[in-house]
Structures are given as C-alpha cells and as structure tokens.
Image: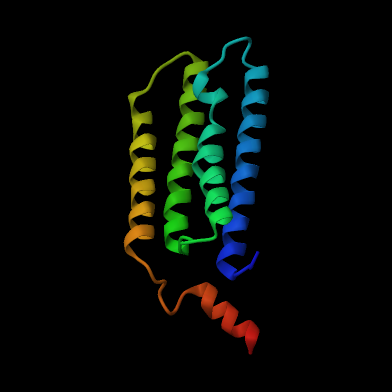
Length: 143
C-alpha cells in the first residue's frame, strides 16, 4: 500500500482514536470502581464515540485508500467526536453524583455541529490550501 503523507496523517488519527477509546474505558472502570455501586450508561459507553466515530471510519477510509479527508475536515470531525465523548463522561459523572443538569445537551449540539461541519468540508472542499502547515513543513524537509 502506498503511504502518502495523507495516509500517514490518517493513520496517526486512527491510533489516537484507539488510544482515546481505551482511555475512556479505563477511566470509566476506575471511576465506577469508586462510585459505591452506582453506575451510568453514559460513563460505561463513553468509549463508543471515539471507537465508532473515528476508528471505524478511518479504518474504512484507509482500507479503500480513496478520498482521504483534508486536515481541516479531520480537525472538525475529531473536535465533534471529542465533544460527544466529553459530554458523555460529564453526563455520566453527573448521573453518578445523583443529580441532573440540562446543560449537558450543549455537548451533543456542539459535537453534532462540528461533525456535520467536518463532513461538509470533506465533501465540498476538495483541495487543501496551498499554505497548509503540513505542506510547508514537507517543503522544508525536501530542501
């Protein structure tokens, strides 16, 4: 398989999302071990957002090796998945504490907006800007 700089960047994002999912799993296990038998499904399933939201799509894109998203689309998408993950953890902490808060819906809204924006940039913005920091760094390495 040809490893272009875009493939390498996407592989790094894939590894990062797998690490994030593992961290969420570990965090939920430790947090609930000290919660005296109280648990929250939001805390238990916080790992699902980075696993299914990043790892699965990135693996499919790398396997197909076509139409790799640009850095701005990846950053928007990752921000959305991060907002959904953090929102799930915060909601889990609040539920384990034994209270409710309606402001946690902001995480869902922000995550959705970022994810939709990332998809829109990926679909409608076909070329990266010429002065991308990655292209500038690559040109410096070639010199």
